[in-house]
Amino acid sequence: MGKVEKVRVDKWLWSVRIFKSRTMATDACKAGKVKIDDVAVKPAYQLQRGETVEVRKNGFNFVFKVVDLIKKRVGAPIAQECYEDLTPEEELNKYNDWYVGKKGTEKRQKGAGRPTKKERREIERFKRKFY
Image (tube, rainbow, N blue to C red; front, side):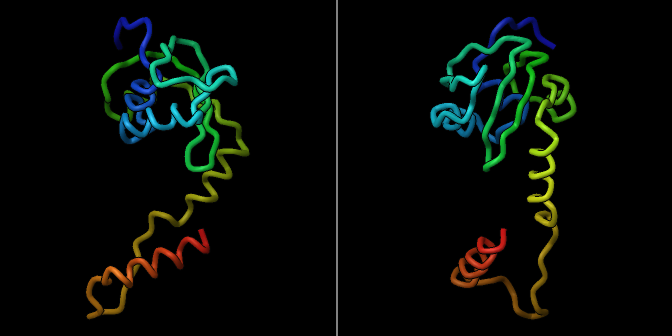
């Protein structure tokens, strides 16, 4: 990859696709959801190879070991080479159990058309009760 010695933690989290946007990574750091050695770090923290990063995201605790440092966002296969996933097995199972069925498509009655804004909000409220 690159010859970078240090990189901002928020930039690295975004680059390796842990967060969808750099703003989300920065906000997570500011909220204390990103820790290194059990200490919450600021977005500008200079990350080095070999460090272990703990990320709390959507109620799940992920643990990553930094293998390589990159500054720019890259494709998923390349991004996965830049970290080692050390997330405990029970946490991964919790995540997988939560994620099951989230990607399936939903069906509406033929001829019903798209849901109105009111219907969509009712559907979202209903789903929140069960997920």
